[in-house]
Length: 137
Image (cartoon, rainbow, N blue to C red; front, top):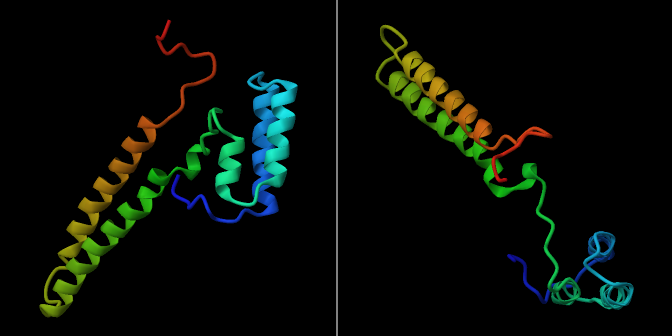
């Protein structure tokens, strides 16, 4: 976990942990006594470490796919695309801007590569359709 375990928690953090405990109780991972004990720990928690202790030995909910850090790489790709093209346009301008606008070919080439790379990454991460067998039988 990236955050410091000594960080103080807010009521919203406790509510999130409480919801997570309820989902574990509903799925049968906790007995009523364990759920009540851990819920009391969550309500008494002052730090992130206290909340972690209340959620010990339970699988953590994975963040939605749209919140994963690698999903922001498209912004990095866009920045790379923009920088390469700005440098080419600057070279063309500072060299006198005579003749044909040659950076158009760089713009076109990098745009094709950018769109192709985005399409390839999104198809790799596509979720299987409901009812589709993935061959793990």
